[in-house]
Image (cartoon, rainbow, N blue to C red; front, side):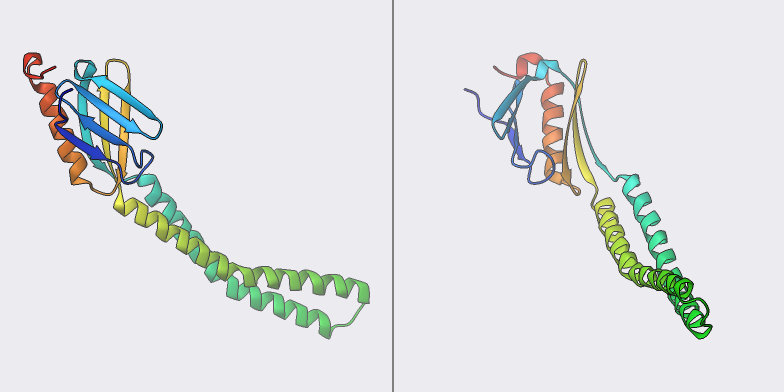
Length: 180
């Protein structure tokens, strides 16, 4: 059996715990309960890139704007509901109608008191999305004649770049130099 030229173990992402091993004439993926071997002759190209998902940034901005709106609306809404409750209590008319108005305005005030914690939760979610956007992913794409396989790890991973360079060098080598 030939010796591996290089290996890469996935420490994060969907393939966490899996290992890519490059041999002179094949690429082997060991992961969980499965193993896959791809002859280098069937591999058309290798691509590695650091990418950031702009959708995460867009969602973070939307959530931050929504949190800001909720925080700004909360105070005036609470004050307005409290003023309406006080106004209804001052002008005692028909008691059943007054009770309905008071309970409705009190419910509106209670809802307004929930807005600041909701805004804080949205802000925390937006911060998490911003962090995921900032860290990005290093994507390794192996292209075959009819399909592609993608492997990703969180952050800018130089080891995956080096692994891809070794695969590309092996792919570019003449078939007689690849060994058996």
